[in-house]
Image (cartoon, rainbow, N blue to C red; front, side):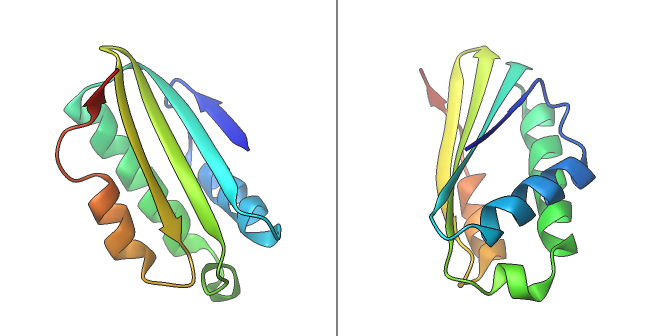
Amino acid sequence: MINTSNLSVEPDQAQNDMDKLLREDPDGLWFVTLDSASSASWNALEAKLRKAFESLPSSSTSRMTTVHFALCGVRPRLLRRFSIDFGLDWRAQLDKGFEGEPEEI
């Protein structure tokens, strides 16, 4: 499990996190908290994840490893949760994970 706070996630950090999770045999969990959850912060986080995934070597993204994502907003209290199976098309799964509105918690 990798936990990151306050959207301090830089693309290089996200890439390193994903590379580490994908090298491990078991499935993983990537958990991030956002102090202030807004459309802009969700969009920024999605862009950072997309950039990190695109930078990964194809050997990492072709393994059948699942990473579960829990993206939590503190103010307001919101949650986005989804999983990506990296042996499949991660782009479509990432798009789906950020579709619609997050859950209120």
